[in-house]
Image (tube, rainbow, N blue to C red; front, side, top):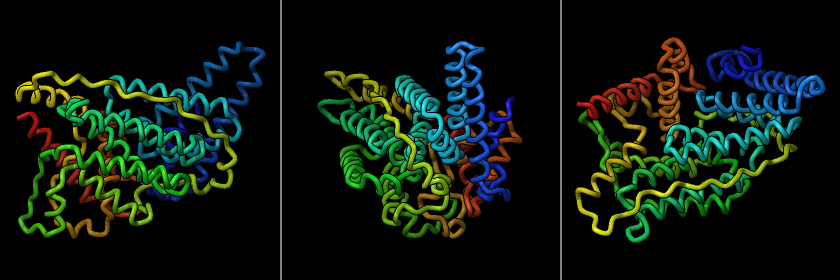
Length: 380
């Protein structure tokens, strides 16, 4: 494997955020510098190669970077910053990254690839933070998702049995806000407010989902009871509201782009092409309980709820965590399990070395056992 590819894979792993002692800023600068020189060298050599060869190099290099972001999503803030720095010197390469991201994103929507949709939303947010995408492009994606979700659960125009799909789209919006909510509010506050109003309106018309939850302890306090009364969507919404009230400040998401803010602002923003949500099956004229249940089951198979919580430890074990930090760490852990489950050594290394400045061993245990318990429940 070439040196720049290996650097991309290992970026940030020796920084303090990942348990090391090397500043991630050095990693990002080194990585972006080597990729830039690789592209420049290939461009200088274009006389001995065809233009198609050079275009192929740009395409394959951008695809490899995108693949790293998709399969190591806890490093997305680092990859977003690398792309932002490359944008200062090689707009063609970064334009290709954006185009590939748009193509992959639309393909994921068409095929209902939930993990890819969710992760690419996070990557788009990181690109926006690094000035590669204008905030309006991200808001356009939000608007498309909100419109599709609201139509789906509409009794007359849509098919409420496919609420799982609508919930997933709204969850995608909410779950990427920890990675870029502060930047969006700073740059397009009115648009963010409109998006939040749209989400709140959707939550009022959807039906509450009965979550499968377990609690080992009987002495649940009032706060826990309040959370227990909410389904996953309502719970995530309350965590995002808490984050908003806290000025969009959280500890679980690295913000490496801030170290390069003075440089990144000079980069050219690239428009993200329009995306469209696939149409869901229409609602039959006579929708019986059996037909509704069958369609609801089909929707939940394609768009399953991702996080299921098993409360093993009392709340005081994680009392210092903000509500949104718990969600972000759960996302990190599930992503590592998803992409690295076939390589136990790498999987373990990433799970115990997440880029967070607080202890999360209790939360890691709960997340792992939650998944095991849910899988057992589903397959019994």
